[in-house]
Image (tube, rainbow, N blue to C red; front, side, top):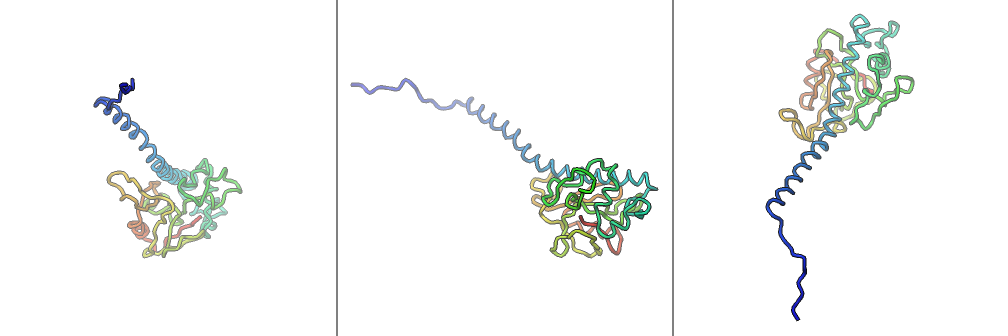
Length: 231
């Protein structure tokens, strides 16, 4: 008796079929990877945009108040000078609520310790704010004065607590690793895995600053003491 043979024959992939498979895999990689990387870059861009909107809100508010920011004007005249001098950041952002339009921009998406508020009312607390306030920024004067920025700062390896922070030009301040890290930095920018934060200046511009150059920006203000209100 002759052994039976299967009617089904086995054959190898042809070069054309292999090329098709490789092409399909390549297309999937091109589509999926940017979306995965984009989730982080999108959150990073959102935080920068938040600070840009905050900077614009300061300038709009100043335009209606003799070209001065809220922290330059006494409470009796509608500003927040005395309040922010104690480290109160909430009052300043509430004062600018019309310019800010939504409290959502006060919370960074990469900030795990703060969350967005629903409105600017009594429910708004420092837990809803991710950005410090620079008390010494003045509208139309010294545009590179620090007006706001990410609040995840450490001084002497100690995370900054809510309240008023006084920094000398020689203070060694760095960002914590809890918020912004460049895993896949754009060409020509910060190094991979480098920790950085965002600063908003008196002219409304926002810059991404790494730890190695952060202290230079506080030194360039020319102030004997830089005053920051930390939420």
